[in-house]
Image 1 (tube, rainbow, N blue to C red):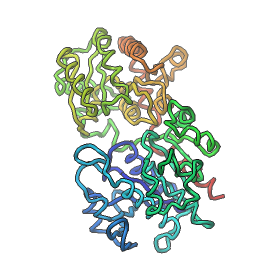
Image 2 (image 1 turned 45 degrees about the vertical axis):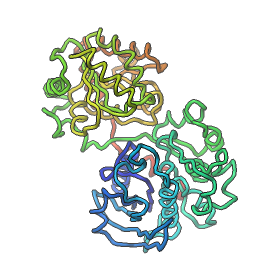
Image 3 (image 1 turned 90 degrees about the vertical axis):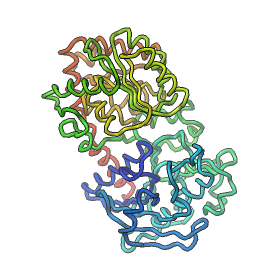
Image 4 (image 1 turned 60 degrees about the horizontal axis):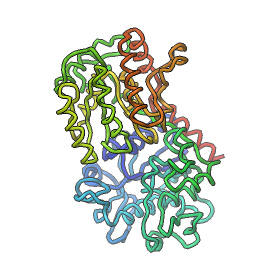
Amino acid sequence: MKVLFVASECAPFVKTGGLADVIGAVPKTLSELGVSVRVILPAYPALHGITEGGKVVLEIDDLHGGPASLVSVKAEGLDLLLLDAPHLFDRPGNIYLDAGGSDWGDNALRFGALSQVGAKVGLEGIGRWKPDIVHAHDWQAGLIPALLRQAGQDVPASVLTIHNIAFQGLFDAGLCVPLGIDPPMFTPAGAEYFGNLGFLKAGIAFCDRITTVSPTYARELLHPEFGMGLEGILQARRTVLSGILNGIDTDIWNPQTDEALTATYSADLLDGKRKNRAELEKRFDLHADVDGPLFCVVSRLTSQKGLDLLLDALPALVARGGKLAVLGSGDREMESRFIGAAHIYAGSVGVIIGYDEPLSHLMQGGSDAILIPSRFEPCGLTQLYGLRYGTVPVVARTGGLADTVIDANDAAMRAGCATGVQFAPVTAPALEQAIERTCDLYRQPDIWNAMVRRAMSHPVSWEQSARAYLDLYESLSQ
């Protein structure tokens, strides 16, 4: 079986979120299952060194204002097809935003081009390689199913994965012509969304299968509070909608071999975790005592992540003897509030604004619990890292958080299967109660350590996810 992935980012080359981790990992795992996978990705500046060593397999004289080519190259275990169009993608900084933090004004053309080239390869193939399935990811590749559908018969099946429905790709309807969307496709049941061209809506309307990154998120999207205006069309297509849970790279995220840790450790030998905690306390200027748990946050500082609720719950956390280390950036006001909290609760709260990949590993290795109070969370990865590192996840009961963490309620504790703490509704009082429950559990070392070990044995790799995708592809090939 041959499958073409089309996406706007891919780890480790370029990453702004969890989408990149999926694209960097799933094709490799599928390859181990016997699937031939190629990945189309824009040739951003970070990929120029790789592009230079590749082979041009397609040339385009004019792709929305300049020449372009598709370059075939293998890197990091992936078969890449890099869309080299300097006039569209050769820009500094964030791949979606300009220096002022606004969307690039021509994002519709940039990622419309990605969709057009993806559809072209889907229809024509590259040399003797022609895909049976085209798998489009998020709005940036959302036009592909529409372009394939309007091409007529004998086209590959298409799958669309929604990684975060909050980002939909809405643009002026006049762009339908340059982007190749025929008038019959631009209807309320198709690519039209309140007079705009909706990239993600087009994908939802015309693909053969829709997936999201967790089963609970797939169900949530059918309701207005989560569907963000697209719940109607998702309801209409619910028979082809499913959720396939994300995973993580268990070679990179491995507490037994992680070079970012002060001391490595395993579920059988947890001593290294205490050494990592001591180092983490130094890095965040926290008091070196073990009376209460050390919580961490590694996140974008936004209201989606529910971190305003954590600010409200901080007095309760500190009063129970807990400490907090925060690493992240985002909303300026929220950044300021966390910095202020670090001054108010000096020694109990430490904050570093920004992102530091090695430090994020140390935080997982040295913290006792990780707080994820998201208002919505398609899947989430930090709770999976927490499970892997025995850092007990304290999570809102939503999306992938609900699917991956087993709450330490009485029944789960008696059955010996709890791996973390869930809370609902997503409010500051409910979060406070979850923090208090976590502190109570922490002060019972035998119970706590048993939960830590269960968390570390919880399956979090990509293998199960890749097999679920393979089953989906095979169902489309029958």
